[in-house]
Image (tube, rainbow, N blue to C red):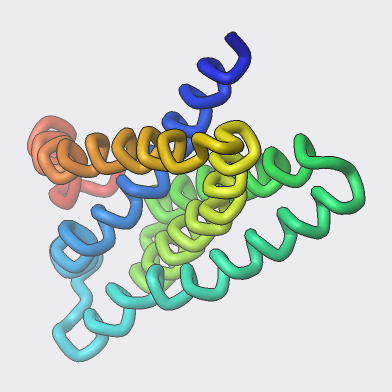
Length: 171
C-alpha cells in the first residue's frame, strides 16, 4: 500500500545522507590531497568543513521542515527540504567536479554535504509520520538502507577512481 511506497521513499532518501557522510570520513581527505593538492596544514580544515557545516544545516533543515509543515501541511514540510537540499547538493557537487580551483572545489563539496544533511530531520520526521506506532521499525528500515549504501560507497569510490581515472586528469 501507500505506506510501503513511503517506506521505500525514505529508504531511498537515506542513501545520499549516509553515503555522503561516509565519503567525508573515508575518501575526502585523500581526494582533496591527491586531486587538488592540499597540503597537510590546510587539509584538516577543508576535510572537516563539510561536517562542520552539516551541524548547522541539520538544525536548519529541521526548523524549516517544522515551519513548512505548520504552514503548508506535513507533505510540504517533509518534501520541500529534501527537494531543496538534494537540488543544491547536485549543483554544488557538479561545481566541485568542474572547478579547477582547489578551494572552490573543497567549499563546493562542503556545501553539497551540508545540503544533503539539510534533509536529515525531515527524513526522520517522515518516519514518525508514516510509521505512527511503528515509527521505530520505519526508522530502522530507513537507517538500515542508508547504512547498506554506506558499506558499499568506499568500494564504489575506489573503483570509480580507477575506472574514470579521477585525480589524474581534470574532467
